[in-house]
Amino acid sequence: MRALFRKELQENLKPAVLGCLLLTVMLLVQYRNCTVVPGSQPLLARSLLTVTSLFCALIGGLFGWLQMRRESHRDLWAFLIHRPVPAPNILLAEILAGLTLYALAAGLPLVALVVWVWVPGHVAAPFEWPMVLPVVADGL
Amino acid sequence: MALHLATNTGSDTPIYRQLTDQVRLAVATGKVGVGDQLPSVRALAETLVLNPNTVARAYTDLARDGLIEARAGRGVFITRKRKVFTREEGWRRLEPLLAALIGEALAMDFTREELREAFEKKLSQWRPAKGGKDE
Amino acid sequence: MNEQPVIRTRGLTRYFGPKPAVLELNLEVPRGGVFAFLGRNGSGKTTTIRMLLGLLRPTRGEGEVLGFNTLALPPEARARIGYLTEDHQLYGWMTVRECGQFQARSYPRWNESILRGVLAHFDLNPEAQVKDLSRGERAGLCLGLTLAPEPELLILDDPALGLDPVARRTLIESMVYLTRRSDRTVFFSSHQLADVERVADYIAVLERGVLRACCPLETFRTSVQQVRLRFAGAPPKLPAIPGLLRASRGEGEVRVACMHYNGATEQVLRSLAPIDLELMPISLEDAFLAYLGERGEKSFILSETEGQP
Image 1: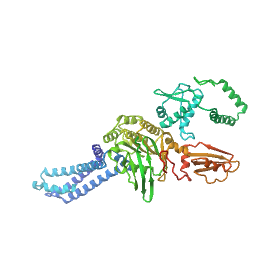
Image 2 (image 1 turned 45 degrees about the vertical axis):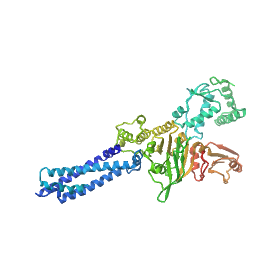
Image 3 (image 1 turned 30 degrees about the vertical axis):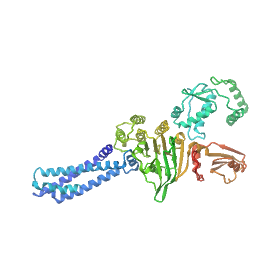
Image 4 (image 1 turned 180 degrees about the vertical axis):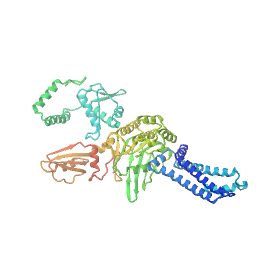
């Protein structure tokens, strides 16, 4: 099963990196827009949240679709299924790989953003953690 | 070993019969003689890319006709033809060969005289198969 | 000797919409030897194979492979079954070496030297990417990956499709090589009669989803006979001939291909008063074509081991 997990990771790495980069770019753009208005809370900014939610949903969907598409050719699916690994395990490996990549692709830019906001102290510290929540919710 | 066996798919003749015919011909023309060894069933099957059962069948037929024998642990060898045929059976086997020869020759516009001469000549020049007895 | 068939189906049926791709298939594949599954394109061979491997759910009926129900093949069964698909599909981004490693990790039993032998035979570069391989090279790779776990049962779906003669020859050689062990079975679908003639012990013929024959190859061959009747003038019209498969007329002669030629059939033919009646040898291909022809007998050829039609 580990082999399947690794293979899925390897296979979908490129789209994952792409998604990650795109999200980073979008976040940067939105952040720029937000910081133009002084005193605003970037993490709570409407536009930022809209972007995050939309984009995360898109990336998540795209990922799932890509994973499925790879195996949609009947014989390739046969190649995957016909092995001495229980079918549920095969599916689990795929799902786990997908989630891991998604977590990394979407998670990294978001975490980076949160850290960035946290460090220079644009925002008052106490408001820090609850503000992360909407972003995290979007991510999920 | 001088014996070179080949098979054709898509022929009217089943493959096992192609093999037996070729072995018989080789013995009759002296290409192999008594005591010569044939490849094992498996070896021949793998060389000719055939199902071993087909080869086994050919070998069984040849053994039944007294042409070959299997010596335990040593292999398959050409053997002295035992008189397993009655005279009748023998003529029955010979008849189609004669018909084929005559038909072919006449179709090529050879005259009967020419054919008779050729036959006599071949017969008088015939060297018996290695170790066999000229009967 | 417990001779349970390695593959057994009972009433296996599969519809795609209103059309039956496979209809009431009752098949038994004995252990050991080579079993050829014949039929024209679209006759239902691939559908049957997919059902046997639990990749497609039958509409009705059931199948058993190595004693397990096809709908619930446990991993230990899959470990013993090798499956080669028509298209030789693999992940394009993997290299040859990675494919080997990927497969090796899934299988408890893996003979690396077999894989290496096949790869060497096909002259495959381990670092080459699958998407850069030719069809024949991909087939070689798939063959190696399938043979390395030393499966008890090898199921090949039209393995020679799209292969050049050299690759085809290697494929057949592998099949002959596998028969070294009498407990190994090869089940392959094909419409290459030349290959079938070489290596098959048994054949099954599928036509439009219906099983038309299931017997040793030899039985099939001897069951179909060809008779040539010669006449002085134009040949007469043919009466009903028992077991008739195909009749063709030429100048002053009629050739009849029929099944189970016997004394009764001969009598009917002689009643036409031909100058000459001769039993002619017939090639496997002609026998096959006659059997599946327009007037092909809809009856079953009895197998030598069972007495039921």
